[in-house]
Length: 296
Image (cartoon, rainbow, N blue to C red; front, side, top):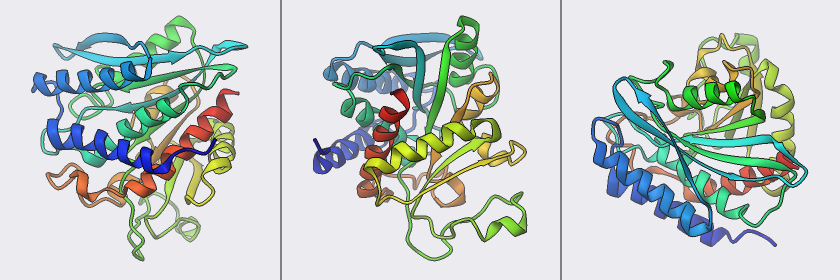
């Protein structure tokens, strides 16, 4: 059965409006916004029939909470495909693209796959504390989760990190390229910001290839730029995917490329009306298709 694009788009708009419009900036020093965000995400998952669990930990003196739901696999339940997105923002922005867009897609993918029985376990995680001052330190929600997963011996076969997936532009030269990309490679990079990027480190090449195969099954019309690069290209380490690389897990960042495209990054202008919900709908369908493919 084909996904209902009108319903998906309507739901995406609702999620972003509630998170970035109604709640606004979401950070630990404003605890009511975090409580409201956790309540919203849990309420959505509860309405789908999921039971969510809390992974609480200390984040530089405050309690932070990752939210987790799982669909157990039928034949290889010990093997996990993880889809995650951070729900926090910096203080200066309502965070529509960064990162309400990703949380919205996380929720809708989990809704689309609710009735699917896959061979591998699917784990959905809404991460706390991706933004500064927690970024790249032990207090980052994905760092905590990835470390705990490694200590438990979790067999995470692939982690997909949703990081800003709602801003698109068809204007020429609306897309910039990371400065450390060699000049000879730049002609192979898109210069129009109308695509989703799937970016891995070099050991994640197989996951990247299989993600592309799965994504294109149901989202053929959505441009997808998939690439694996050395981690010295710092831009590819700027989200929760890097936490899993640090623990030796394959991971991809799925992104509209953030500040390489979106002029509203970390600004008060990162509002729900700046997002392209039709393209976000295609991203949702493609990610759901890829997740189903990887989990089977």
